[in-house]
Length: 122
Image (cartoon, rainbow, N blue to C red; front, side):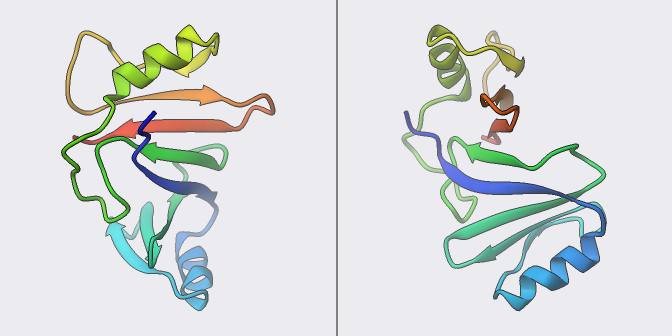
């Protein structure tokens, strides 16, 4: 499976405080509105800070993107990934519409209830 770019998406209480904290570790703003969400990078490492958008932290994979959010030519579409995980017996918390193409996402929960977001932007 080609899952694409990987990041951790953190549910934060205070975006500015969280951004300042991760800047101490060498992260800098890469994308986001700076008010409700901020994507930060330190080399190939990516974290997303989301205030008031998610209840829990989650692992995030972006099929079709590299670690710099640049489109890649060869990737496994999110709907194909969804079919594979469902065929393996996983129950999904949300699903991509398999009759569409382009951007879509699904969420699986690991055995401890941690969400895994597969979020395709291309």
